[in-house]
Length: 247
Ligand code: ADP
Ligand code: MG
Image (cartoon, rainbow, N blue to C red; front, side, top):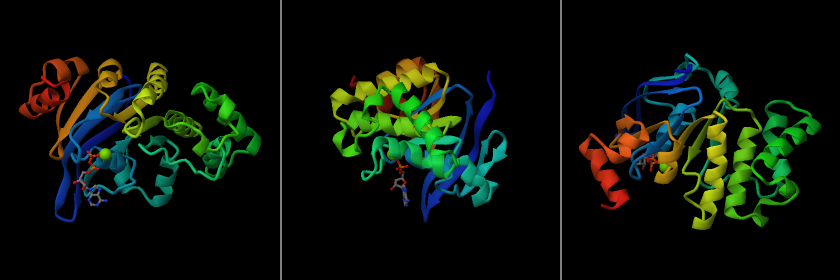
C-alpha cells in the first residue's frame, strides 16, 4: 500500500446543536480515488471542508502527511491551500477574467510565479483538459462542461498533491457530464489522489478504489465499489443503493 496521505481520526463537526459529522474515521493513500456517496444533507461537503480546513472540525484529528491540520496556525494552513486542489459544483471562475487570467491568478499570487511561467503552466493544463484554444475566452462564453474543465485545469496549475471534487457534474446539462468525468478519469489514471463527492455511480464503479457511503453523520460503510454496489452489508447502504439503482 502506498503512503498514507490523509487520516481522519474521530472527526466531528457540529453547527450549534446540529451534529453533522458524528465520528468520521478513514484513510486515504497516495494515488487512491475515493468516491463519497450518500443522501443529500448527510455531511459530504462538510467532510471535504473539514479536511481542507475551510471549516474547523469541532473535534478529532485530520492528519495530512502526518501533520494534524486542526492544530495548525492560519499561516501554516495557507501553505496547505497549495497541496489540496478543490473543484466545486459551480465552477467559481472569475467572470471578469479570461480563462488564462483565471489560471494564472493563484500561481502568480500564491506561488509568486512570473507571468511567463504561470502562462506556460496554465497552457499545459488547459491543453490537458482539451481547451488550449479557449485561453483568451471569457468564462461566460463557455459551456458548463468547458467551465468545469477550466476549473480543473486551474486547480491543477497549483500542482496539488490531492484533488477534491464536490459534485463536479451536478450543475451540468447531461450531455456535458461525460467530458468532465473523462478528464477526471484521466487524472485518476495518472495516479492523482482524489476525493470525489458524486452521484455518478457509473464513475464511482469504474474509477473508485474505495467508496465511502455516508449517512446520518457517519461513514456507514467503506469498501471497493463492487462490494458497495452489488453486495452492501449495512441496512442503510442497502436502502440507498436500492433507491439509486432503482430495484
Ligand atoms: P451534503 O453535502 O451531504 O449534502 P452538507 O455537508 O452540505 O451535506 O450538509 C450537512 C448538514 O450540515 C445539513 O443539515 C446542513 O444544513 C448543515 N450545514 C452545512 N453547512 C452549514 C453551515 N455553514 N452552518 C450551519 N449548518 C450547516
Ligand atoms: Mg454537498
